[in-house]
Length: 369
Image 1 (cartoon, rainbow, N blue to C red):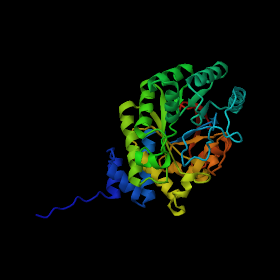
Image 2: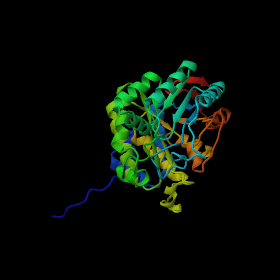
Image 3: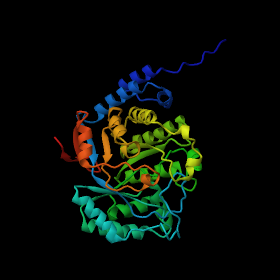
Image 4: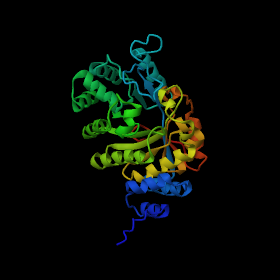
């Protein structure tokens, strides 16, 4: 008897399935990532974006990346920002007055939050963060979107606490929400190559799970375009989707491409294999279709540039991310795009959308009618 192998669905069949509100399988997403029909995939991603959010609006936030220290013991191959403990010339830990000044500058231009992330400093336990967060909250009305899951895990280990204990104490001290940093690609084969000392996939997901159980909102990210396969990109998205089914705690997904300057991973990734703008837009569009339970998709103009960031608004993204009056990590790897509120408003208006400044939790701050 002849056994006939099942025929993989076509791109058109998969896109029709998505438009009919059927959930994509991993195999469906892999087919889309391998296809070259960017316009068709983008059109469906945009339709799904319009179903999930207001089709007439594009949001953005005014905040600041406040990298409080670059001292780190984790030695990730893709990172050009960190410095090892003992590096007297270039390592730093920002004193409180400097942090206060940066927050005041943010508030002065209409900012509503700070994204605080740093290295895994060997000397900083939970007492440091509790004191810092309480002192900030005593002085300023500002949202603290701070500490990626690897930082939380580092603090817990350094302080001999469980993850739930650590998160509860940080929340009580003023931590409002968690960023999705440190996810990279949530496949341990990939992580063993690019960040062998860092939080494992299950550990990253469990920090987020525990944060969600405490009622804390978080974001999810993916940094790709290095040693992962397309199948592993989908595995990453599946892990996010599964946890979101369980907790409903992720409010947005942000993906960006590996930046190669000044880091050791550049020696492993061949020049010709780096993602193009086409690859970026396709991956974002597929993420919008696949992650049917995540409310928002954010364009990554910080790594792609403002023009592609604007184009991404037609490929599933409903948010332009942050004006980001300060950024140190991506820029350390050689990418230094900058913008202003006026420029983002112009870019959004020029595609016929209404610009809306939001806060970290996607609440409306100002409409630029």
